[in-house]
Image (tube, rainbow, N blue to C red):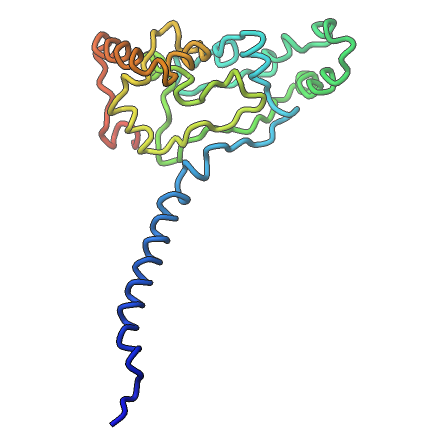
Length: 232
């Protein structure tokens, strides 16, 4: 008596189960990697007024300290951006004599003088932002503990236009809180991004581990890992 289904269909459930497991693994792996801040947020670089504040020129070539513009970063949780008067102090018409023959420079910075004249703020677009359910990233606490700007922002002095260098995810934050010594530097070096970049290079990894551990013990730090430290 002939069977209704051919014999090869006996292996069909096993094949379907195997294929389903492989498909599920691919989907889970894809979500695990692609649906994360590391994939979506790192590299975020919004278009800014005037093409953006060129940190490569200001902080890199001119050697301006981060705190010249971000004046309250050691006292406040917020990393304030400079008001128009700070920008205008360098980019007023009377200060452009050195660039008298540089019409592109004058045109590129015209929006600053226009904002000053109209008594308006420059509408910079925020690059680094933690989710609303996180209270904030307290810049003052981290800088005063000896965490460099470099650890979160990368070498900002190499960036013509600012972009997000790190994911700012919860796991990324916790990795640092669980081993803060890897990012600790002398407090007078927190804004010296070129020095920190060299200190944290692979070639100096061993020295940084020793120095970071020493700083951690000296400062008696206790980086919190409880939920209430950030979510309140």
